[in-house]
Image (tube, rainbow, N blue to C red; front, top):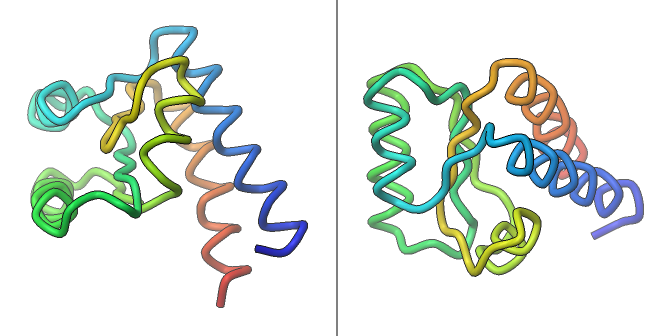
Length: 113
């Protein structure tokens, strides 16, 4: 990963930490699914090292409920960024945080091409 990508990656993790500390993130499969289905999720992130079934489940669910979905980083780092154990999935429940994090994720995708 080049320096710019590493900085953007760290920026996303830092923003997830801020969102978690302000109670604007739910994590874990059950909580993420509930947030999506109840309309509280503005953004869903699933770790790149999640199982194929988990990725497919959340990708399809987010497509159906029209929630932005991203694969990002590893479950250990996702959890660590929020002060928790490994987290395979999470939902951002604040529109402002979600928009900001989403912009950085889009920048990462563009730079990886």
